[in-house]
Each structure stands twice: as structure tokens, then as C-alpha cells.
Image 1 (cartoon, rainbow, N blue to C red):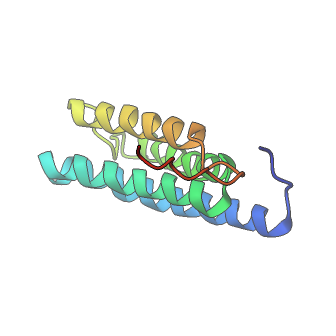
Image 2: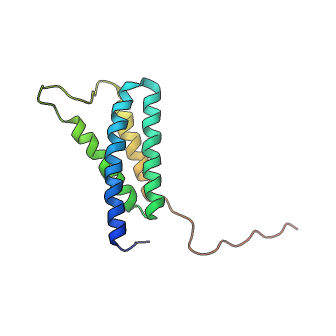
Image 3: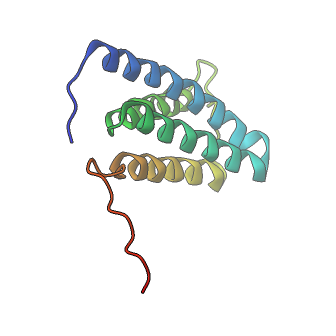
Length: 127
């Protein structure tokens, strides 16, 4: 089920790229801020973004744009600053759980199938 690339679809993907970068940056910062709840909150936000991108565009391309922005925020926040330190700490397991969980959610949302294009037959009456 491939869809044509229209200007509206390309604009939506770019919007999802920006939304993914913002959600990713907020998620990466929240994971270390609130130890148990920040991880859950960040993963729920990422899942909602990926699922919303899938539903909005109807194909996995929406998830790809959001996931690219999400991962881009990880790369940018993981670079060393001029002072020599890092903005993201990799000392705890929460950062890796957030990275792996977000990747699993992206793959899950990109490969899921929507409802079939044909009508679903009604259930047969019970005898």
C-alpha cells in the first residue's frame, strides 16, 4: 500500500520531523529529571507521536519522519558541548531503555496494518 508523494504529504512529513525533534528533546530531558515517571512519560509521548503520524498519513512514512526527528534530537543532545561535558548523561540504564523503547515503538507503528480496504462481512447468526 504505497501512497503518492503529494506536496501536502511532504509538508506533513516535515512537520512530523519537527514534532519528533521537539518531542525527542523533551523526552530525553524528562527521562533523567523524574526517575521512574519520566521514562514512562517520555515513552508514552513518543508512542503517541509515532501512532499519530501513522494515522495522519495512513502509511509508515509518517512514522519515519517523526522517528527521524526523534533520533536527530538524540544525536544533537548527545554531542559534547564546548565546555567538554555532555547534555545527556549515559550513566543510567534509563537512557538506553528510552532509546530502545522508542525504536521498538517506531518499528511497531511503521509496520502495523490498518483496517482492510474491503468491507468486513457480518458475523453469521448463531444456530
